[in-house]
Image (cartoon, rainbow, N blue to C red):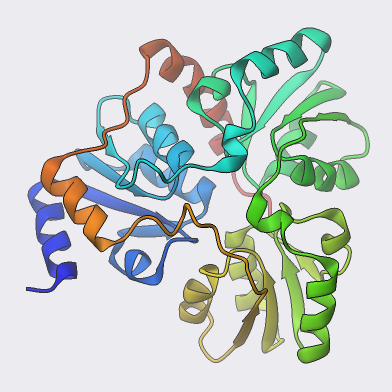
Length: 302
């Protein structure tokens, strides 16, 4: 019996659903019941009927799944699969910022811990950040923790004053304008699609700025055949499935090491031993659920 078959058998025995982010390695994406971005995965987690959710992603994603399903068992196959951006924001720092700006609404990127979500008014993803901020009645908005995404939102939502936290995604921040320029010279007919977690000077060179799911839709609907993808390289695995016949080029070095920790062995081990369960305080789950549900109600924006 293959390793893939073993995982699928144990999954059925446990009445489990496997959710995988677009940045997971191909063999994990291929075995998942659902592959998507943070918003899509949150929505899937909220409506699943399975008793067990095994989340192939990073820590904040599994926490969000638990918040949305407090009565279910949520497993994170690799405990060290942590998001460095989420770790850049702590509760104390957020509370201090809120105290300095009591009239501001707090919008938190979904890439945050459940404890910090409990202090937010509404969450957002890269796909709906502009839509979320634009929907608020407050003129002043605290936006945490991704500064690059916040600057992208500020470009579009001109009637709001955004107070930004100095956080970032190391993988996206590593992409440089020079790399984009080199890729364009190598592939002059390719369109550049960049993730809004990239630096502003990189976004300036893009033909389109989209979330991962937005990139998939853009490519599928575009008449162009060739694309330079400025995000984590594993998205290309799904792009090739969704848009066969089109050509994709990645930016060298766009690898999230934490997303690569999860593999079929760790998924099988987690399911067999029911290990690495996400456990959160009841109060945190109750309070964090509110901004997550508000985010899902807003829906997609790109």
